[in-house]
Length: 213
Image (cartoon, rainbow, N blue to C red; front, side, top):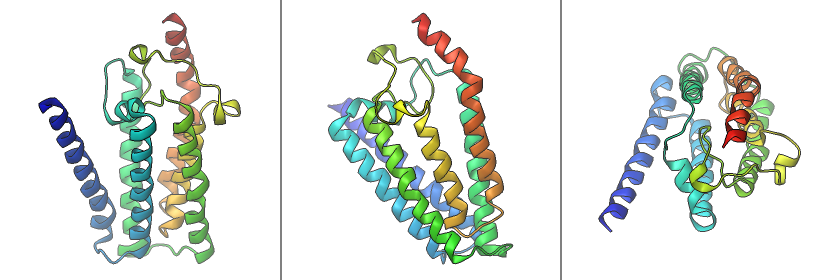
């Protein structure tokens, strides 16, 4: 029981820190809390994440545990890639706040802003679909021997090798549009290119290590 209570406390602390960190990334560069688009985005994002976690806890608790923790066996190169992605994401959010609110370097037409918010729908639907089909959907690449990992070929995996990346790319490209920043399209495009090119660089060593096990 103490171990279970400790685990719950750690998750609550982790979620709380993540929430405040995201709020800081949005509103500190903006210099104000008066940013309706950001509040709308955050509401939709946290609602989506909350519903996803509830679904996983009920239907696939092992996947929820896998995604909420970092276990042994994660590839070193994948850690570096995640670090680069995290830094680019921080830059993206900072540029968005500086551009859209503090300095207003650019103006996004309402039609593009609406398109950005609408684009979140297929992105989130695809990501959720991936989670329902692939119980081995770890945040980082690792061979999950402890869970008897198998290659997923159902659902969206019948059509594309990395459907999760497709959903994330669409999400990242819609973010600057919805939050009213043309300049933020620069780091978001770099992130998209990273997600497109990296699988081709890492797929061979990943498949090799997978086949060996």
